[in-house]
Length: 377
Image (spheres, rainbow, N blue to C red):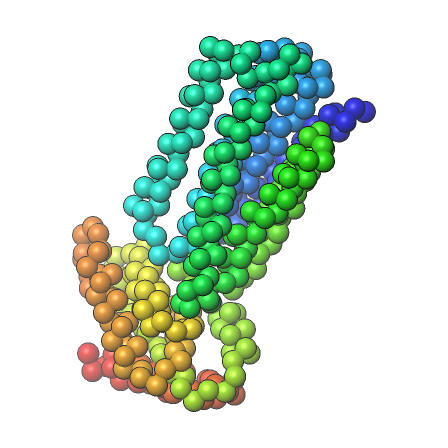
């Protein structure tokens, strides 16, 4: 078997592995946005691997090698790899910025697509108008083609990586360190793989193999996050609460804060579970914003049903409560559509000394205070 024939087989094999992975992702019972973005990222890897296999077959002569076939294969690779790294940009940016609204996400995607359209039109027109300009006498692409091929993907992949690392430096983002590092891990691995392929041998499928490994790595980490994350609100769940408790050292200035949505059962019974879910998402968004404003390492989770739990390292619990109430008012002010019901919460808090053995007592005390507030409302 020729070297390029082996290259094509590896590309197809990696594409088949990712097809199985894509099928697995599609069967996940989760509405989380980042899994939808990740599935698109996997899809475009598959398309690129098939395109790269086509490129290898053309250069190997299995498919007739002429101006048309060579330009078609190289045009396909150039456009698809730009879409691939566009998908990387979107996945990295949105995964590391959970506060982004749907309007912001759509605006970002629209802006990022513009360079791809420009590149695709430019290459198509120039390939048709002056095909010999792009190819040497042996039908190999010239150096300018590789500059065009790599420029846009390089910008797409480096920009979100630097942004991820810059966000890690902010104290309020330290709790999301693992997410940032996983998202950013694709870049160094893909650059190393691409560099090895360019400088070692263009006919060795190092980039294809390396991308498949890093995609599997990211998938395993996303699965790990899924186990510890509530699928509706994207907050930590009780499994992650147990992990958090085991990592704490004794500290007298912790406070456990319990937040409960008032009349939640009535919302579900009267307006349906979809509206109930909308209320949960709105309150969770307000709590995320409050955690960011507190500027400390606050743990937040969905404790169960319509209850949320925060562990706040502070000696001023009243300040944390006021921030939660203010953020909820702000979220309600942006609420869209008909407002058939009010969303209100009851809040209770109790001190915690940092010992795992005393945590349940603090939760009970915070819950009792919350219940008293609910009854007096």
